Image (cartoon, rainbow, N blue to C red; front, side, top):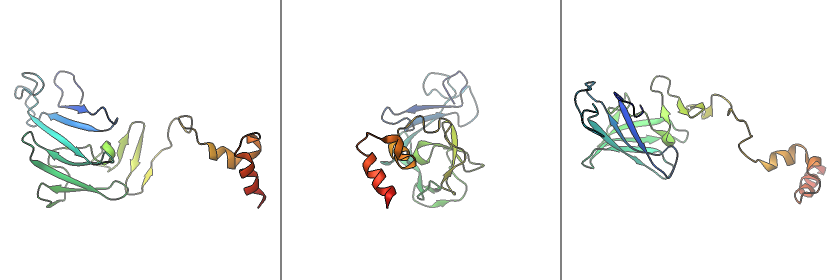
Length: 168
């Protein structure tokens, strides 16, 4: 991955969402002397375009001619199902080596876990494997503090509602 010389894969990402892939160039034959995608003698000879839905789930791969190469579907928690272009189910994952699936996250084919920036998500359990490293510092969850300790919120307009709820 990346843009260094001799890279086996290079990605282009969308500006509309941090995890929205647009295309991938790949060294499909493991020969760095072949291929000219990006620049001559790059070694990259296979280009695929990502097709996504409104939730940024990758739903398919398209070739340079626009033909659908492979399709994907997911359960509610992100477990993928793989299909050929004609919706024939595939048993063993992507035939194009695609690892970007649910919500644009990288999926580890061996474990089935999604790598999401700083932690891992388990789609069969529907849970994160670890806590968020920054905790709640990156968000403002007002009601958590109101209902946990409403006396600290004296003077706020919502404190009367929290006190009334606790008196019942």
